[in-house]
Image 1 (tube, rainbow, N blue to C red):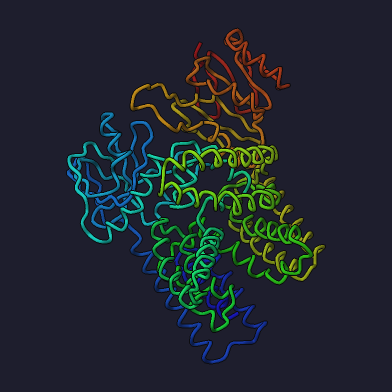
Image 2 (cartoon, rainbow, N blue to C red):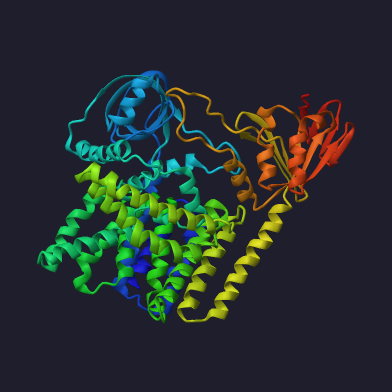
Length: 636
C-alpha cells in the first residue's frame, strides 16, 4: 500500500506542473487512502514529503527545459547523427536523428534509384553531412486530427529537418552508436531477406518497430482492441523468460544464476527492441521483481516501483499513450489477482482478464481515439491465446531458423507462417464485422469521472458486487450520452484539409453537412517513386466521425463535378456514411453513377435548384453556394 501512496504522490507532484485538476485529484485519492489505512507515522510522513518535493522539482525542471535549443534555418549545411533505420515509401524518406544531441524528425526526397537502394538495403545509421532547413513541427491540420506535434514534444522532439541534398555519410565509431546500429542491421536483414507480406510482424515482435506492418493489419488490431499484442510488453518478455528458464534449468543452472543472467540479458534486449515505454515497464518490472523477490515483494509493488523509477527518469512518460495503457491495465489486473484466481475454469479466468483489461483501457481510448472497441472483450479471449501461444513463439522460432539457414526458413517456416496468419486473419475478419462505438470528443471532467467510476467498478468486481458494477457502467453510458447531446448542440463550421480539395464541414442544430469530398491520393508513378504504402483518405472521414461521435453525416453537398473535388463521394455513399446526397440541378446528368449507387444503398438524392436553400445556413444562387459567410463558386 505504501508504494501505491508514493506513486499517487509522485504523479500528483509531476502533474502539478502540467494539470492542476488531475494533480489535485491524485493528492485527494492519496489522502483518502492514507486516512482509511491510518498508516502514516512521522517517518512515513517525511518520506512522503521527500517524494512529493523530488518529483515536483523533477517535473518543474522537465517542463522548463522541454524546449528546443536549435534555431530555425534555411538551406544550411547540417551534420546529423542517425542511429536507426530510416523509413522509405516511394521516393520519400523519413526518420529520427540528432543535431547537437537534440532529437529531430528528418525528411528527404530521394533523387534516384541508387540512392533509394542504398538507404533501403545498406544504410543502418551514421553521421550524415547534408544541406537542409530546420523548421518547427507542423500544427495538426484539422480540428479532429491526432496532435502529432504535441505527441512529439512529449517525446522531446521539437524540430523537423527537411534535407535538400545529402553530401556524405560516415559510420560512427563510438561503442554506443555501434550498439545502436545492431538493431538497424537486424531490421535491415529482416526487411531484405524475409520476403512475404507478414514480415512486418518480425520487426514488431522482435525489434519493437511497428512501422513495417501493413496498415490493414495495424487498423484491424486497433479496431479489435488488441493493439497491445503488437507492442513488446510483459506478455512477450514473460514468454521469452519462460523459454530461457526452461532451457537453463535443463542445463542444471541454479535459480540464482538464471536470475542474474536474465537481469543482464533484459536491458540488452530492451535496447534492441527500441526502449519503448511498454518495453521499459515490462523489463524494469521483471528486474525489480527478481532483485527484490527474496523480500517477498508483491507483483503490484514491483509495478509501482517501476512506475516511480520511470517517471523520475522522464516525467513526460505519463503523457505517452502506450505508457498509460501498459501501466493502468497491468495495475488493474494485478489489483484483481485474487478475483481472477477464484475463477472456476480457464474460460472464466480469461473472461475476467478480458473484461478488466477492457474496462481499464476504456478511459484512455475514449480520451485519445474517441472510440470504444467493445468487441475487444471477445477478441481478447479468442485472439490473445492464439497470438501468445502460437504466433509469437512461431515468429521467434522462425527468426532463429532464419538466422541459421534462409533456405530452411523458406522451405519450412514460411508456409507454416502463411497458414497460421491466414487463419488468424480470417478470425479477425469475422470479429471486425462488429463495429466500435464512436464516443466523440469528451471534456476533461467527463474523462476524470470515467476514470473514477472505472476504479469503483473494478473494486466492486473484486468484491463480487456485480449489480453495483453494472450500475457504474450504466452511469458511464449516461455521462457519455448527456455529454454527446450537449456537444451535438454546439454549432461548428470548419474548412478541412483533405487531399488537395476544398472541403467544408458544418454542424448546426445537430445537423451535420459535408461540402465536397476530395479525391483519394494518386500513386501514379511506375519507377522508384512508386509508393509501397498509400494513405487511404477514408481514414480522414473515420477520424472526423470518431471525434464527433457520429456514425453518419446527414448531408453531402457536391458543388462540382470534377473528380479531384468530389471523387471520394461514391466511396462514402458506398460505405453508408452519408444519409442524404445533395447535387445541384446543373450537375444532375453528370452524376448518374452516383445516383444509381445511392438508390441501391437506399440513400436519398436531393436536387438543389438555384435560388433555394437547403438549411438555414446553406443557400444556392447565381452559381454560388453560400455557407455562413463563405461563398463557393459552382463549377460546371
